[in-house]
Image 1 (cartoon, helix red, strand yellow):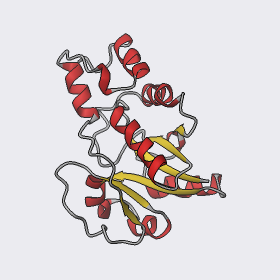
Image 2 (cartoon, rainbow, N blue to C red; image 1 turned 45 degrees about the vertical axis):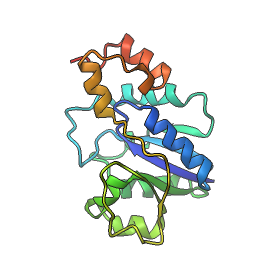
Image 3 (cartoon, rainbow, N blue to C red; image 1 turned 30 degrees about the horizontal axis):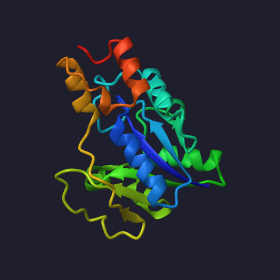
Image 4 (cartoon, one colour; image 1 turned 90 degrees about the vertical axis):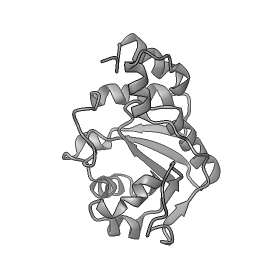
Length: 191
């Protein structure tokens, strides 16, 4: 089984995430895409994060009608902050018959040298890279395990959505319907 791991805070999950995961299934050899909810990305501020279980709930309702999409809580059970290399080692041990690749944005590839043990990740896993606005070429672009995809440019971010909600904007079509219903009913991101 070829599994694409889409790591993120998903604070909240939005249509850009869903469309990119769909693209990866359609245009690569991936059999499934797992949305790996990160309790704490070491390169981001933890204070701005919604509770991990609320973010998990939103991912679950977003993917529930798509059998090839899965929500993964693997990082909830690992030491914090989460390092991708540790998560990959744990997944390989737990699912020895699966082949794991990473789905990352071009902005993450630019900073890939900052990732813990990035050489080890590149040696054993493919990186499927989707374009991001205003990103330049990276020293990793020509690595044999880096696949630069031609996924449509999705200039939607969780930050934009959180800020729009705080500014009392109706952005319901930027997130899956059930995610919007949850955000609205729970009054999330309004402050």
